[in-house]
Image: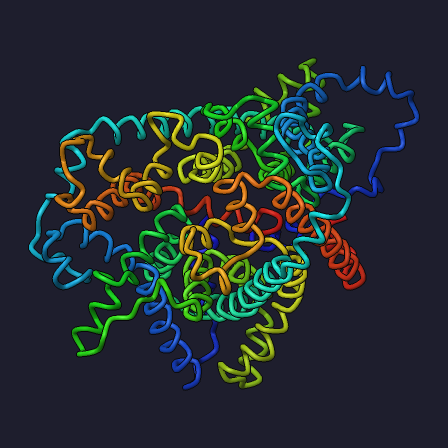
Length: 329
Length: 306
């Protein structure tokens, strides 16, 4: 099954190009619908779901160009052109959100991949079955629990009065720190929490890739007298390169999307930290929940969607050029 | 999923010094990282069994201080809120997983049928939703205002039924069912739906378990849609959203123990928060060892992460 993974991963993705359409599709459309009515009916609930919850809201993006109010509705509200975007750009907010979102993702991608690869290599060295099983179980656990609990954990560790960190500082004779008002500390805290949450889970892909390496490569290396480091450098790392590049490009495609739940549960409405912690998703959510500001939030969301769409297209084009099999479409 | 944990076939070559060094480093590092992952859970657990005064004096620590069940007694003295939240979450999780799983399996099966001429266009129609979306605000207005689902559990329940990723994952799993099975059903005169229900579905147990796990986790850990669409309109909030409120607002903390005659200053608020976290998380962690392997198969068979 391991050897199937590399196959499975790219074949899992739908191809829009329609290369594989059977040639018998010469029949008229109505006839084809009639012939396949059962299979079409089986797809119907899912189609209805995506029409209702993903496609139907699309026209609502028009709100970004209006001065929206509930009474006049989406298309009745006054049209203001690009004024909502102008405001977001002039206030510097769009730039701050873009910068924060991208910088956090770059840090997550670089550090995340390094840790995941290192962890996968080390897991592969472990021979004791039970040790491996138990340590893996513990390392996946953070991904399994709700992000709300991560907020509780951060509170437990970091709060001023009773936090474990401040308790430790006081025991060693230091003065407690008001971490929840130091904006500069939060990028580090958020990165650590993200890595805590996702490294164990993310290492599965690399671990599976290592398990899929042909054993004869390892044997040949051993016969040539390769040391453990040489084995990693010349056998394992080169074998992981394709997996790494594909995952990297996909995560670059998603660089405008943030880990909303984590950010919100760690920072929430704490305005003192926004300069270093506000990302697109948290800002949009806050505009809706606490300000009822639908115009700016739609504008930011539309900007994110368009920018993200362009990035996915670009990254997919690059993946295609490297290896057509891995491309999304 | 033995393949992930099973050791490689023993190599006949002798190990050098560097191999032992790497192995030693690996054991130490993996142990350290596992401890790093487990530590916060220990902190929460021990805090929930500590006395409030000890926490106020010494702060949170690794071992319970002045061991007590006080915080749990507070929660279960008036268990109406927590039981209500449990019921809401359990009903949503069970019903949502069952319905969602059935729809996902059906769709995955149809889209994998090589003789289904619409499979590429429908796949793309579903996949496109991950590439471009209206964003949160238009979706919110659409669901809350036009579908009139604000304040309704349906807003949460329906939106969690499926994701494009789970359909792709299922489609990928269905591929392992041999086409001959489907053909044999056709020869016997069974309709497409019957082939799915009686021949394919029973062969897809691992796939159903994996997708079911991800669906169930989505429902169990849900707080986000609840915060948008339910807010304070419902008496019983889904469990994680209930916890979210306890952590973030003093009022919710007081209401959670139901006795409005208890003043907020008397409440063991720190330990109560931790005990609530334990109560809200408990069952899923207990279930975890049994379902962990489906997690692994999900990501190895699945498409892109997330």
